[in-house]
Length: 384
Ligand code: NAD
Ligand code: MG
Picture 1 (cartoon, rainbow, N blue to C red):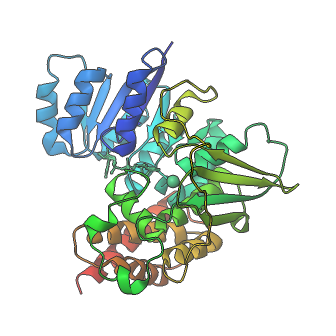
Picture 2: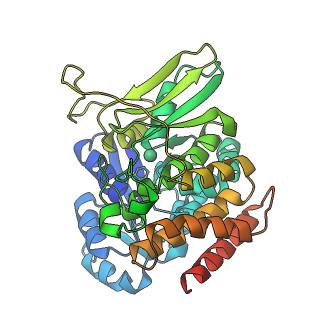
Picture 3: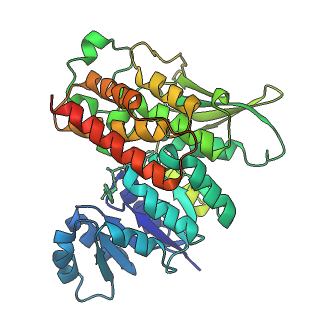
């Protein structure tokens, strides 16, 4: 029997790579649900190739075009944000690959957990916004949340067989992004196209900017806290520009386990989909005999202050990570449209965190409200 996969965000960088994995393993996986926000052309092509049960197009104006293109098939077509939640609540799939970008991924993922479905989680923002409630729901429903983010997949893999052993700390590796070694006087002038050029990974626009500002690593610290039930001070970030070690776990006896390999997101994607099994593939292998150096250094937090803001949010908890995430989404969106400069991203996030009232133990409703308030305030800063 094949595992029936629902890919939420099938037209993105993670979504298309997940479909590559399904294409090469048709005996193991089938694509049962595909969803896209605006790219209806790609969604239609994917649907015709993979013949899912259901597709969802977020943008309702595109419903008729998708419906018409799939008229000769049995594929059901839904449209609109609400449909994402409705489809997540259905029983036609076994495993959700949560590959929507940003806060928009939270509700469908919660719905899938409520529905008792296992999750492969690429959408880190879900845990940054409401990690306590999301993991609580997963526990309550006894369903696994398997990380797809490469660092967290690495940690997850290092922890296999260690359930009785205490973690001393986890070491999240960071490539440093395209501006490693640069200083503020350089960063003040960088433009979107430069910031979108990541040295080791080809990813969606939002995460590429987050990698350039190091906010991505900050979000990942918060993601790790919830996935692995860690205390904030157990999480350390180290810059490792070659991206061969994907992250490490240090145990009580000082022993360190690392998970390594060439950087290729298809590996953590297929690992999450096939877990607890490993499946063979033909991806290129890392060769230790070839000349090459693995290097490590401390992050430059005076330049990349997002990492400080995110670390503060991690320690403060409550609604602060949710506010940080919302402000960052607005700021990155504005930067991608050339409305603000690179360093303004940090400034906007900082000012928004200062503005929005602290809530120590938010309900889900309060997380939604904090998100909305933070977005409004951050957006108001752009007009000036
Ligand atoms: P992307 O921008 O390439 O794709 C995003 C997907 O989400 C698309 O299918 C898009 O249609 C959909 N989408 C966007 N906005 C939406 C909305 N408002 N409502 C519904 N659907 C929406 O992004 P990506 O790079 O694939 O990243 C997806 C997630 O995975 C992010 O949370 C990212 O942090 C995480 N992630 C990505 C990578 C990577 O290599 N790309 C690595 C680790 C983690
Ligand atoms: Mg990552």
